[in-house]
Image 1 (cartoon, rainbow, N blue to C red):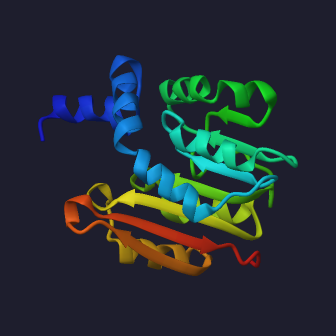
Image 2: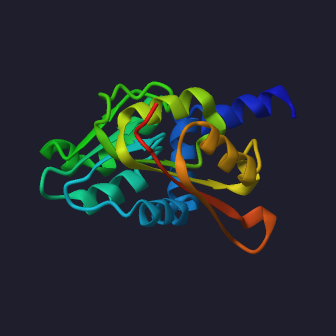
Length: 202
């Protein structure tokens, strides 16, 4: 792939920034919406839950999660290393940000800034390729309460590993009750969904 094209794709989707990042965010809103919805369904957040949304992008899943946890002290924290994505997500979730239901800040799957055992669930959609998986799983084991759940959803064609290897990595990362579900009839349209539990033991 030509270096110029690689740079353009990175600024649009990999590490969204500037005008290209805003264009990429608009594309993500449309293209990722079904995966965001499925991830929230798998996580099944309830009123009062505290949920971490990793690499939230333009905030579609962040908004869906906020709607689900509203009430009884519910809280959603979105972390994303892209300033452009944080800005888009803040606009989409402006009411939740104002009320304190939603917080958006700089962060990654390896560096969430969360306190130990402070989250009930963690959700990731289409950003597993950006992870240092061993470091990310350590961080997520740390911030999820015992019994807390991790949900990972990703388009098969953008993954830098196979769904089966991702499941094995999740187990190796210390999670249990790890299930893998595939959606879509063709490789190019298939989506992988991982659901896993933090056993809460070292």
